[in-house]
Length: 335
Image (cartoon, rainbow, N blue to C red; front, top):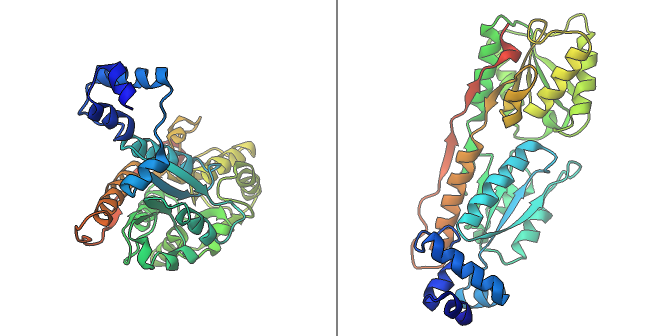
């Protein structure tokens, strides 16, 4: 590194700041930063992470546990988290749940064994991970997706989001409102979407209409096939609320293949508001999930906990926040 500093004609500390510190730091001008990086490349310098960890007792690595990237929701989450963590000088170890993986404790334990600085964990449902997060060594872990009173957590206000979607379908004239989801989304403990749907139809004295299919939560083909069957039923619903946007896209495709007009024959509402949802031939109405805000807040608090663990600073009060959702109304539900 001293050779890099000499070649770039900067102080050793400046070179260290650029090569080992926060990559988004504004303490060094862009021109100087680039000169240092060019010198490092010319000399073949690569920071020794193991040596840094021994010296600082930090790995500068964060574990990220999410669902499979076949689901575009999680692909977006990984993109947001990894970009922000890299900007703050951290590397990311990514661990993903498989669709056929009912339990995920071994994934959490795999991250813990890597001696990382902290973890961001996505969990919507009650699995063994929840109990493991009670342990004293989990103070530098932040849960995303579900409120947890004994650990820092950030979640969307999913129940309110579901109610907004169902209220909207009622307002546009739907009276037979169904819930469209894969079987796995109906039976896992803690899924607030299905629970809220059942409570809402009961409160409004409407029939509970559930349309499900076998398969993961992101398979458009299986969703489409189930929707094609639904389109032929004589007592089909006049509106459906789908577990997520991927399911809703498959459902719309199936309905239209059978000659139904969305939304006139059946209104469709999704959940997540993926970027592509607004670009469909029939733009999809969807509950916007504040993924950017949740990820940023989770990262802020995680880095705060890491700093507390490396100093004499007392552990501050837990953060258990619900982030508001909003309904993005588009053509798929406007009868």
